[in-house]
Image 1 (tube, helix red, strand yellow):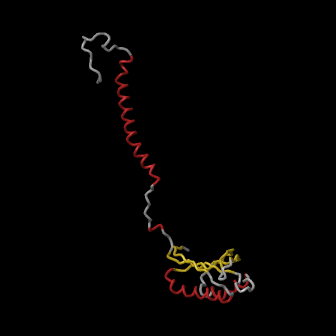
Image 2: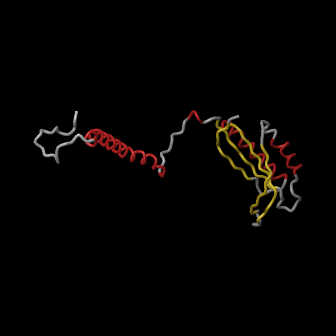
Image 3: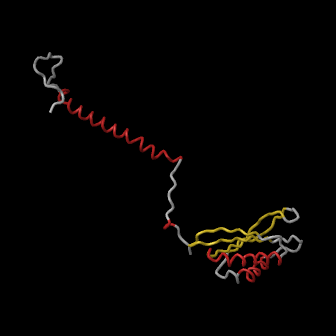
Length: 181
């Protein structure tokens, strides 16, 4: 099925198709040109969509949290920070004294476990002096459902340390989190 009109015989030689190889390829060239143009048009139409999707990184859509991906149960993490220098000028609290304090005051209230880390810190004491000292960080982890019971126990630990070692304070930090064991 030719794409060009057939000659009627009245055309001049300049306008009449000849039987040369270029004339036989013309329908194939036209089909290839149409296919190529269509392909480019499809690609050109799809490219902005792809670029718009890939280029939207400046304002990413937040992904909804998947409830089933959260593991563990609701816990409270309490950290207590114990200083070792005594503002009254007494000797520093030793490792043995601190561990004895843990055995007597903390372990009976939190027998399921605890973590102790050594540290160094600084703070301003009640006289306005910056103190740099060796310190301990005690981490307690317990179910959030026990918070009412555990809160007063933790306060008794803080009070006992302040009295036993003449401390101005014991810092308390708390955070609610999920824990899985």
